[in-house]
Image 1 (cartoon, rainbow, N blue to C red):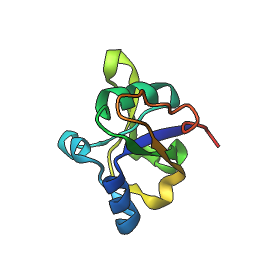
Image 2 (image 1 turned 90 degrees about the vertical axis):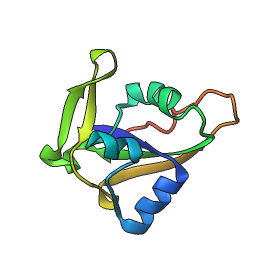
Image 3 (image 1 turned 135 degrees about the vertical axis):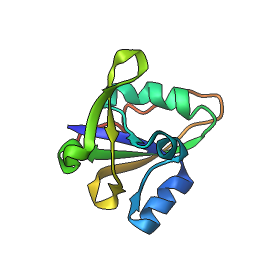
Image 4 (image 1 turned 120 degrees about the horizontal axis):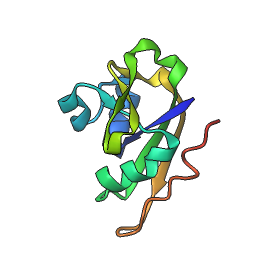
Length: 115
């Protein structure tokens, strides 16, 4: 199964440079890296990236994360994937840069494709 991490361009650039990340500031504050399933991705973008016009969508195969990946209840009681460890560049199976005009809704259907 593939899960997704949304990053701002500067966070993605740091991941590419360092080959690993402990996540965005919200991830560091919460103690785990937040991921979304394909079905959760659109709402995650709407809620947490409303001011952004560019995002990176990173697809990660859950099998590559081992027991550091936990499924925990979050928004509305739905189970969300949380990574308790570093996200390595080698974990990333797919990556896409997506754009939108200010005020438009995110359109991530094409970005969240299990390849």
